[in-house]
Length: 91
Image (cartoon, rainbow, N blue to C red):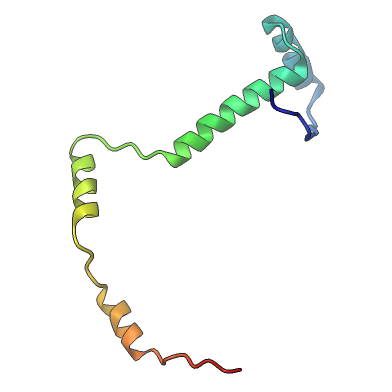
């Protein structure tokens, strides 16, 4: 069991509070547990959606081909690097 050693505070309207209290009662958990369960579930979904890229069909094949292809130098960037002065270490 994870130790609960952090606290968050929340401001909400009385209408929202009443609704949350009723919903927690319906599922048979405390308001704190209800809020925590829903927040963690939503957070997991949001983070997973942010970390995951879904590609279908030919888009997936093109993505893999681009990853496997050799890198091509970007002309203006290469030119700028060639013009750059070398750095000197100064004590």
